[in-house]
Length: 184
Image (cartoon, rainbow, N blue to C red; front, side, top):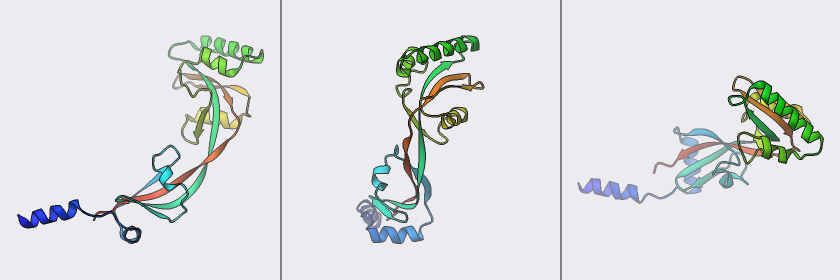
C-alpha cells in the first residue's frame, strides 16, 4: 500500500521534460503521430518562427518540425443559388439579372446581399487553400482573372454560383510536424 502511494505521488509530481530530454526522447520514441498545422490551428503560433528539424516543448507535448511548405491561397466572392429550392430555369434567370445589374454598375457585394442563399458572411471574400472547396469551384476560381464574373455549376449537389475571382492573396505557411507526449 505504501509503495502504491509513493508511485502515485511520483507520477503526479512528474516534471515537464527539458529541451535536452525532449530531443533525446524524440530520437528514441515510437509513439508519435504526424500532422499538418496551418494558420487556422491553435498550434500555429507556437510553431511560427521555428525552422525544419526544430523540437518545441510545451508542457509534456513535444513537437518536431519535419518540413515547412508554402501553400497557395485563393480568394473569391460568390452568390450561391440553391438548386433544391429553385428550378434550373429560375436559377439561370436570376443569374442573367445578376450579370445585367453588375454590368450596369451594381457592386458585387450588393448583389451578394440581395441574392446569396447561404447567408455566409464570408461570401464577399472567401479565402481558401487547395482541396478545401469542391473541385468545380476551386478550378473555376483558379482559371479566371481577378474581377471577372463567371458561373460555376455543381449539379450533383444542386449548387449553382455566380462567382468572381478576387485579387491574389499571400500563400500560407504549413508545418508538417511529428507529435508525441513525454511519458515521464
